[in-house]
Image 1: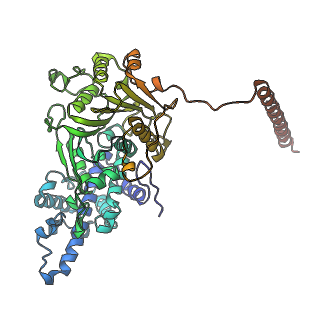
Image 2: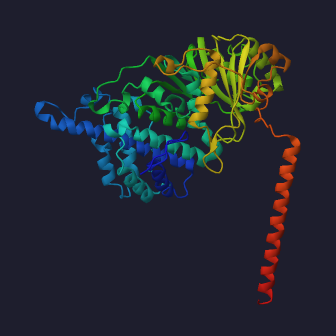
Image 3: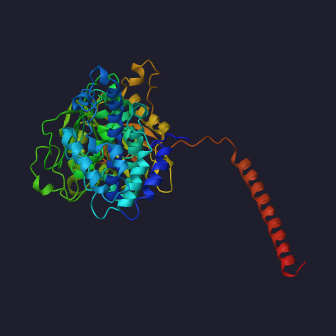
Length: 530
């Protein structure tokens, strides 16, 4: 089977598995079905990892190993799966009318014996609205995939399935899909730009955890083996990276998706549930890196109850739009020397409504804005609103300058309605940013080729002094500054070109007349029988 790596998701067996699982969805709403499917995939994953260790301990029973001792598994950072929750037991009852109760009991037992998963797993498979025959067929489908043993973990089989399913559910849910999924290419671009490899990493609206998992470099840097992901089955532990993860998500079901998403990859972090504005669970956190994709233009964020909040250092955000509440929340949590990259609606770059222009002016004058990137349309499953990337930095090497990048012409269509940035697009944007900053990239640390010196490229990028931004009333839209792309030089004299084009046009007229006459003659023969 052929796999094709893209920045949307890995297409191969994942696509076929999705097609089969989606067929079994029937009339169930995608928002509901995703918890059914992803919960079962997670259960199969931890059961596979458990069974691999169980078989080894069974073989070592003569040396004193006890395959039914939970501590044997916890010592290897593998989830203990009690007998009633093991996949073989579930699969054996897949065609029974009671399969819903069987799965619910398994989920409850796993949460009971693994405190790290408390409150994370779905436990409503017995509800009458869930077709038990389809549920059994789904269990049979998942049974045929090895997703939790060591070989599968090395290939990140479950991670690929999980990510692809998240993207497909986001597409199926449309606008609501943005609550839990950010397209992989957008996350990869953010990570490549800010390079979060050491320190505290924070996402104040973390969704299903894509900012923490979709960059393989970042995953490898932080893998600890916690929760089966990196070293279950007795593999030697990988060195723990100097990374601490902090995330908050307001939607309870999305928070559960995030906890599972991190667990299957062996990434540990402090992921909490709650409203970031009204119940900031990390009030004293100063993060070295902040990555975020806040919901766009939220009007009902409760801003009227936070008029005097200490986070609004640059101006009180309007109650009817949370964009600059998110921006200032991010700035508030940024450590000295910290860097932030986040997605916002394009309106944030130019709006002057309800004091937003004044807030933007204050942030620019504080010399926090490092780079602005205008994104292509159709990248997001959840909205057709044009989007941009903001990059803020507290320790900027180029004071009183901002880099503008217009990436709107970039990307390629992956289906009728969705576009993605290619690896080459991401490389070009990230290298432009790092060249402009004049700093060392991780490639240089590996002895790879250094970043080329920065130069303005008409139509793509331009370094703009603060004085020019002031003249444009603090508007941060890249298209206003980068200008038009250079056209290819045309050295053909006008009179020669005109003569050539006229001759070509005359030839086309003649060919058209010949074809018209031929068609009319054919019609006469048909009409008169000869």
